[in-house]
Image 1 (cartoon, chains in turn brown, blue):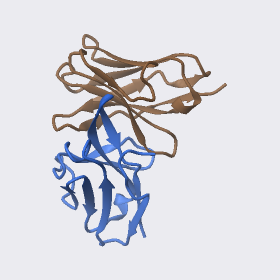
Image 2 (spheres, rainbow over the protein chains, first blue to last red; image 1 turned 135 degrees about the vertical axis):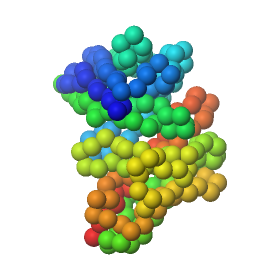
Image 3 (cartoon, one colour; image 1 turned 180 degrees about the vertical axis):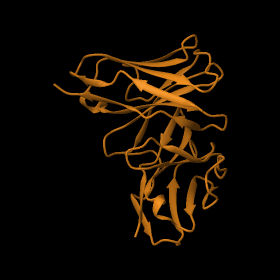
Length: 118
Length: 112
């Protein structure tokens, strides 16, 4: 079965950096695009970034453009999110998710909590 | 402020039919398929409907999606207690800044 397991969350001060990882299993990683989506505690979902199956295309939400970088390592079946210049408003649960074949996001990890606070 | 507009809440008694609306624009719902997710308390979202109206394997046929123009809706018929959850609509959006996935603000469904 498809499994997506995020790690790397924690408490970080404003302005600092953090890198999230998403280990995948149960499917062949290389043919699929991948997403990061976040959810502020008690609030709705916000799409963060997308990377194509071969890593050649990345797209970002305006709120993170220039600060966050999505990447992937197909040899490790792992997705990453490098987050720099973190702000309080970046505090959220970050989900790794797979891009489906129907212009959808079909599988989600359980999420990792990032708290930006001094 | 979410790009797609959903009512914040909906409710019904067991066995009733509940409908959730999702309003977008020509740059998202008007040109891309609508997706619906169910999020149970403390859990990750789960794909409920894709391609406007298609259910993945394992999703009960009590859930049905539809779309017309720049609006979509999710209907839950024969409401059950385990349907109490947050429901989100989503779609790819196309803009001058590039493609993105846009979500509704979510609708909390309460089973009375």
